[in-house]
Length: 131
Ligand code: HEC
Image 1 (cartoon, protein in one colour):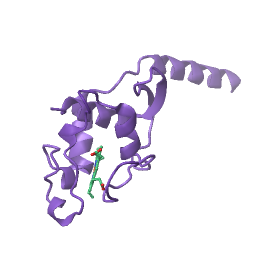
Image 2 (cartoon, protein in one colour; image 1 turned 180 degrees about the vertical axis):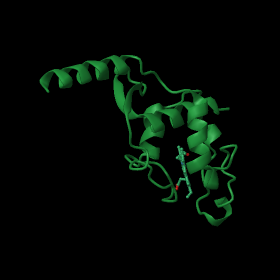
Image 3 (cartoon, helix red, strand yellow; image 1 turned 90 degrees about the vertical axis):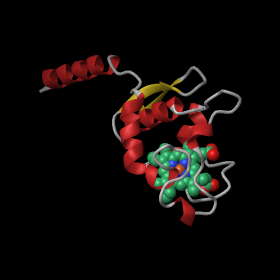
Image 4 (cartoon, helix red, strand yellow; image 1 turned 60 degrees about the horizontal axis):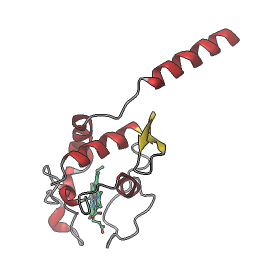
């Protein structure tokens, strides 16, 4: 029993060391499922529900400020942790929906933060569509 647990633990650790940041296409699939209704296929805020919303869904191709994409800020908006600065409340919280295995993500301060893989994938996708 004890030995089985140790082997499982060792395998788990081995698996963890191979985990890396997901690529944008993985996030694009999640985006197509959860976000396009409001933010549109292009991410520019022109989804089918957008005309019903005040304020309008944001243009997600313009999240970078002075060329810097703040992973920490975008993450906290998506999972609902911190919405400081958003004008409205139309953006749903995805914290619960996007739980799962966590992977280490450098959110910009050099510290690796355990982040649910779907959130990390969305982040990679959003980063890739910045104009
Ligand atoms: C029901 C409509 C809706 C859905 C679905 C939705 N959003 Fe939003 N989102 C909004 C609205 C409206 C805003 C504008 C913020 C506000 O309410 O002030 C927004 C704002 C944002 C922002 C902040 C942008 C900024 O200007 O800083 C991000 C990032 C974002 N959404 C990402 C996402 C992602 C990723 C998904 C899918 C996982 C998603 N949204 C799904 C409606 C939606």
